[in-house]
Image (cartoon, helix red, strand yellow):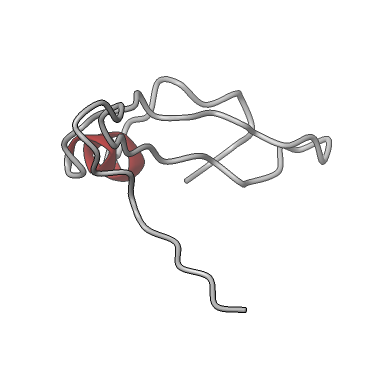
Length: 63
């Protein structure tokens, strides 16, 4: 059996979106779980991921 994974490009398909998710652990070993805003532009979430002054991360989590 062959399988193929691909984006849904049908006319009625929802738009493909991109986002980054934080996988770091906080000081008490809890998962960070912060996420960037989703965007149809794959470069937009990169701004969140590479921002040197993140505002959306819990205290004790560094990128």
